[in-house]
Amino acid sequence: MFIDLNCDMGESFGDYCLGCDDEVINFITSANLACGFHASDPMVMDQTVRLCMEHGVTVGAHPGYPDLRGFGRRNLDSKPEEVRADVLYQLGALAGIARGRGLSLQHIKPHGAMYNTAAHHPPTATAIAQAVKDYDPGLILVTLAGPGGEVFRSIAMEMGLKVASEAFADRAYTGEGRLVPRGTSGAVIHDPEEVAARCVRMATEGVVEAIDGALVPLKADTICVHGDTPSAVELVKAVRAALADNGVELRPMGQTL
Image (tube, rainbow, N blue to C red; front, side):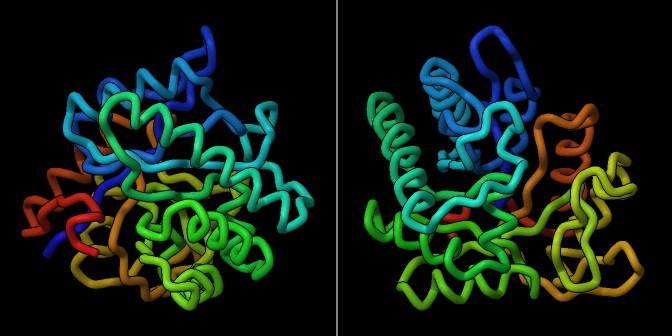
C-alpha cells in the first residue's frame, strides 16, 4: 500500500513566523506552499522551495482567496472569472520561484475557504480546474476525498485533469463527508495517537469515523497534516510511524497517480 503525506507550508509573512516547517519537512512527501494571497511573500516562498529541495519533498501550489487578514478562511463572494485569474496568478508566482531553484510543481491544492467552496459549488470548482488546465494540464489537482468532494472531483476529471483525493489527519468530518467547520467544538483533533489511528484506518480500510459516529467511505491518495497546530510535529511523527507499522509506504502523489 502506498500513500502520500502532505502538509500546508510556507505560511509565514515578513517577520511573522507561522508553523513548524523546518521540523515537519522531515516526515512528509509533498508540500503545499502558500502563494502570497492568504499567506507568505516572495522571500518565504523561495526559502520554503529551497527547504523542500534540500529534503527531497515535492512542491505544490496552495492558492487561496486574497485575504491575508482572514488567512484565506473567510469565504469571498468571488466571481468564477476572478477565481480563475487569482489561481493563475498564484500558480505563476510559485512556479517562477520554483523554476529559479531548478524545480517544477507537482500539484495544486486550493486553500481554506476556496477549497471548501469548490467541494460543493460547481462554478468555483470549474474556475479552479480551468485555471489548472490553462496553466499546466499535467499538474495534479488535489480535492477532498469521499462524498464531500464528489462535485469538485468529478468536474476536474471531466476536464481531463489528474486528481488526487485528499483526507485530513487532524480534522473532524461530518456524516456527509465534509470537514467540520473550524470554530466548531471538536473540529480539530490534537491527540497524536487518535490522529495516527484515524490515518491508518483511512489508508488501510478506506473509511473515517465522522463526528456523529458514522463511518464515511473515502479513498485517499494523500493525507494532509497541518503544520500550524501546536502539536504538529508530534502528530506527523505519530502518523508516519503508524502508517509504516501497518505496511503503508509513503510516496509522493506524482509517483502513484
